[in-house]
Length: 126
Image 1 (cartoon, rainbow, N blue to C red):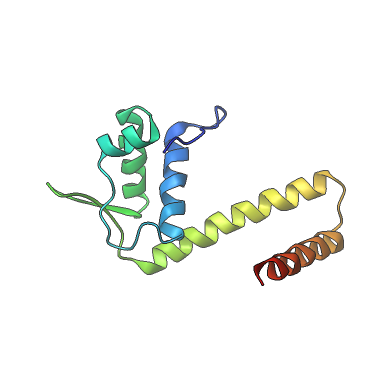
Image 2 (image 1 turned 90 degrees about the vertical axis):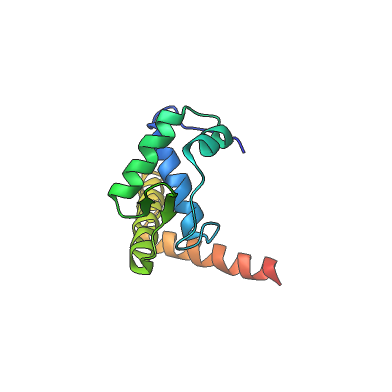
C-alpha cells in the first residue's frame, strides 16, 4: 500500500499517525504483533530508518511494546488506546473548528451543519 505523504510534515510522524489509526480502527488489535521495520518500510515505500524512528516513538509513547527477539506489539493497555483516540479526535475537531471559523461560520451554524451531515449519513445508511 502506498501512502501519500505530506511534504510539510516529517514522514516518521505520518507513519506514527498511520499506525495509530490502524490501532484505533481495530485493524491492529491490542497485543497484536506490528509488522517488522523492513516489511513496513516496503509496504509504505519509505526508508527503514524512518520507520524505525516512528516505531521507537510509538514505544516511547507507550503505544507499542518491544519484546526482545520477538518484535514489537500493540500495547495491551485499553486506556492508552482510548486516550490516543480522544487525542486524535480533539485534533480533528480543532482543525474543523479552525477551518470553519476561517470561513466565517458561527458556532450555531457549525452545529447545524454537523447535525445535518450526521442525519444525511443516517439516511444514506438505510
